[in-house]
Length: 173
Image: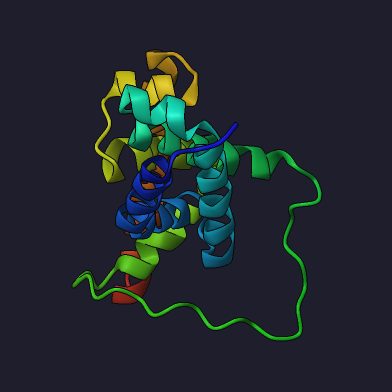
């Protein structure tokens, strides 16, 4: 099967235009820049294979998001994909200036969520997907999306309120 040059050009243009956004989304899903790079690479590889079909439907973003989310969730299920002890910590990539003082606490709280809850929060609030769209992308019911979102938000609120209390020297009940 051969591809036309303009099909490949369209793929390259899509990747160049969306890579940064995909990387940020992948980071929110997994909480690690190196794993985020791997997730994006896997998603873009799968997108390239399906590109003619996906492009014809105009569903490039939806397809790529779905692959990112599912690959992230699947990675948590594999026993070999656990933390490994290393001698040196890698340098994190340069952070974007977002103006949010509590960004690190929010990212840490998000990373502490179970994979399905994290995916639900990222899809609903980072990618601004509806409940129905989130359910479709995760392959679950809308009720599951609602319950996972509620549990995740409760966890995030508890953790973030606890962090605020610690930073201010107070006790959180």
